[in-house]
Length: 289
Image (cartoon, rainbow, N blue to C red; front, side, top):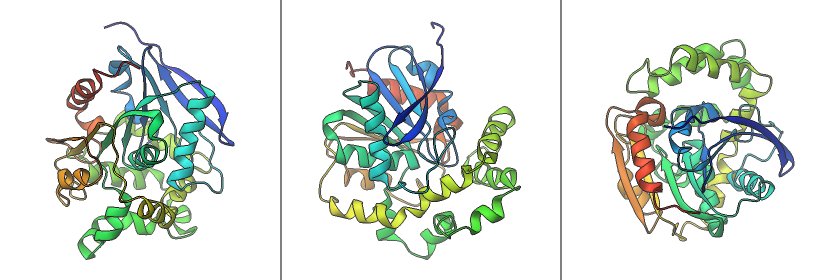
């Protein structure tokens, strides 16, 4: 395996300063992280994919080293962040991989900008509209953080100074192996969320929920037509164990492959990177740019 250099960049695009990392050469593959993570969530995928592709992994609006403005967290605007980044880099078409919140951005990108997309991977994500339409007491209990994070100001006040406890809860509760994200990896996320504005940025992502649902309802009848791969952790109580994920994504896309990852919870790219990497390489192998 050839050595891969990971390079950090910042650019102004769609009115905000965006941070992204880049590695490799070839057809472009973009990786969009979820909550409570940053681009760092893809540390196991970037070196492998960069053997074959130009890999770009941004910090989403509100996360990591990207700007955290007061507004613009609806998924259409966040998809336009990616579009502006691609225009800035003179990239026309991409393969797009999104996990969790990043999958919501990726799904909106697929709906709004299909001409810029060759194929799509969504990872451990139930679409926002589906969660809203099926919400009941059981789902509300599992998705409590959806509701808590939307409360104005209170989460930031309670989390300030307690970022370690807050993050440890999610990484322990959401992973099949509760120690999967520990040591240096955990410390990396703690540093990211202790930065000024970081918690507010993540909360703003959730506070766009009503606008996201409204956007999704408008084009709910329009399927995603590019080849799509849906991956999920078979053991996560709020996704693979709560929803028929194959059925959910068959309702979203016309050309769909699905795969449940054994012994993985909500962060399969961090919990079972070898399996995820194999699935991504197989799905992306015919992407030639």
